[in-house]
Image 1 (cartoon, one colour):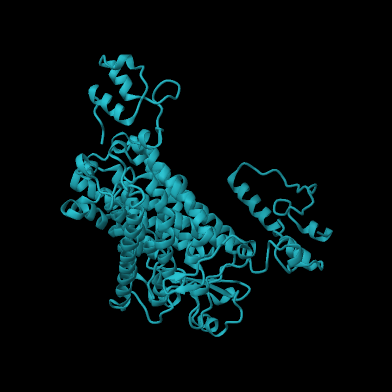
Image 2 (image 1 turned 90 degrees about the horizontal axis):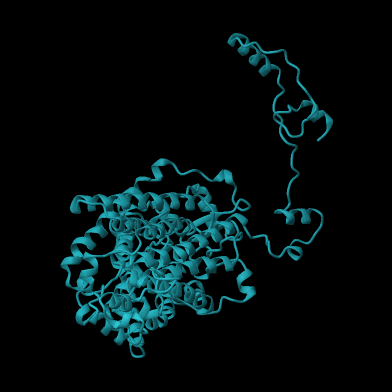
Length: 612
């Protein structure tokens, strides 16, 4: 900075000012009148704040721009920062992927391990852990490209490996999303980011499905089930609705997984719980669990639910594939719906059962998050100038000008001037829609779980451990239908490849609702059939249901481990020995555990009550 600018700078407003300059002012009187006068005088004589020196035009991004200005080779020297990379979008997408991952690990692991009885804490947490780990390997080997690759069938993509460096560092693209004059989806980050983000969705779907069979399915059957279901069921729903399949091109809206994730996991979980039904003395276990559903640690259950809630910011906020306004509104709508649903569920518990249930509050939170997922952004008008849309449709040469994922545009300042965007007005952003969806999310699944479930012979027969059918399948279907009612025509014009669609509340009649119901029917039928075939095939090799002895004892019989060490120096508490010693049997409790049959015999002789 030159000396002339230094002399004009005020030392209190500019770091470039001369620090040794001292302003001598007469002493200010303590009288208010003189104080006001002195302050007014100082205001008149103080120099105006200055601005920092102008920054020369940048020809690139960060160090790349400096190198380009000095004649350096951009691509050769910095291949990790290509011209198409948007650092903000990439950073947000990786953050969103991490948030979704936290929902599974440790969110659902903690939630599952604490919401079940103590004897199933280890088994439940391990089932979630195994599903998460096995999904990643299957996803990068073949699953990702089946869900988001080139089209093979109207509902399936071509299988392929997503591990080569050349594939992972190229710009992300969903080839099958191209339609008409609209180019394919091309986010401003590498394929590796997209692979990671979509893996988290695939993994959490299987983890949610596990909630239906916790403490019921043979762990060996579960280990075989997870990779097969991911490949044969999840990839079909993902490609059909997100990857450019026939439901996407037909106009079915699923913003962030109400159908692909929640409806699929709820229906598949219900089907998985149907095939290994309890028998013998366990035939009424479902009714027993519903009447006396005692978590082993309610505080940890709330903590796991809290991680799930906060992680949903990445779940819905990452769906636009960009750090844009759509992500902001989606995150806000998500939280509004979750809070409304939690309060609605709690109020219903108080009205009908006189007490607020903590488990019910967590379930209400869950249904609110699930219900808003199909349409978290469907109450937002992106705010594109109509002339901008027309010019975009006409100009297809600059593919960096816009990208599209399920109809959400991500604009690049290099291709489209900021001045040509307009803000969404309150009239086109119905902020009340998330509240309405939250009220329905907290009441409809509550009714199906608390009222309809007890009157349905089929629902009572199926041993759905955590009622995933109600909290995910019912809530996901409800969200999809409400999306067909509340979606604005402006948004559907941008989102859907089918022209002329609008929600029923905007004069669209039953057209969009019908599409949403038809899409849900496809997801339901496919999951019921494929899940059944997978389980029947696995049942030929290994039993689907745990043996009765393991069901009675729990983690110690299934894994040889227990969640809580309650005896000695981290030793397991052996009820057979210590209870026998207390009643005077078992030789003072010094014998070894022996086989499961021997332990059961000693427990019966000692009068130990077995908790179901």
